[in-house]
Image (cartoon, rainbow, N blue to C red; front, side, top):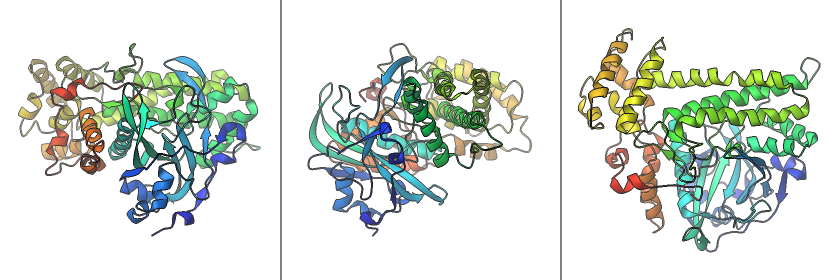
Length: 497
């Protein structure tokens, strides 16, 4: 067993000027219970399940003790919310404990910041109580695992801790904390904060911090060959590239974030802040998962353009450091091409095609129209499309009227003839590797929440099993691949989720 006190802990964010954060004590949960631990994330930190069962682990993850050697703090940032400047925001219910030295997915050394969400009020809580409820904590815990399994960049979740402490939302709920893990939680809004404050020194400090810790091998230092503008433009380029790729990933699996405010956008290109998110069941091109988003600003089909809008807010911050607006705009104009390229790559793979060719945009748009017109299940439509050479009935069963589907399938089969030396079996195998059978549907998350509220973590256990490898069918797990029952179609999530 690795003793928690022997972990290699660094406090790199705390090395920034004190203006970037507030050091403070957490407000831990009363009589906490460790509900669940993600063994994959645990292993990346160099810890074992035996470590996770220790009283010291529970004390830390419930907010009742600091990480040994860590500096507990909450960060300040600002941002645009629903397109409107919201001013100063910050970690209103989150505490950063420090960074633990571990390994990444490839087994290479990596530092992971640990952040507790729901661990009490901070100077940035505004009117909030600093708490998270079990409902939202289970959803974030599972969503992080789901996105990891899908291969889409994301923050991860280490564990879930619960308590009977009351939390007042629309109803009285119980408190919980989810421990989040990421290389960094720096956001677009972290830069916006110092731009709005007209504090160029702090803006430069943050820029240097992010580059030196996360992009040192990709962004040159300011020297005799590289000006500050060169450095800024390369950094902005990387954030644009990662954001475009992330948006393509979201679109390819029917994921709707729900609250794409600039304070919820990671400069590392990670999916950040799981609130009212949703994986689409019945496909609607303009699907809105967030009941609070009455104007549909963050609808599924709007996400790529919102990503660009947010990038404009982010890039504009560097004008305060002397960056030239026209040159920044030129960088931003690359976004559309980068997104389209990443999106096409994913869609070609999902349709079992070997390479992009002229006319494929029309084929893909036609597919979306067919799904939209019939509100067909997003995930299963792609999955069953791989089976059409063996049996069309599963795909047809998702449509009440198959007329347009049959027309599209005729065009699709004609397009498949351009695949060279390809068999139906080989194509189906490729498609199953990129079209998940399992996603975290809202009703599955709700089943896990209801069970967890009774202390039953078996649904969460099973979900983590299928979400770890969502592309491979697992015996006895058929329920997790089914469309929602009638009650599951009516579920709504909002910003309180």
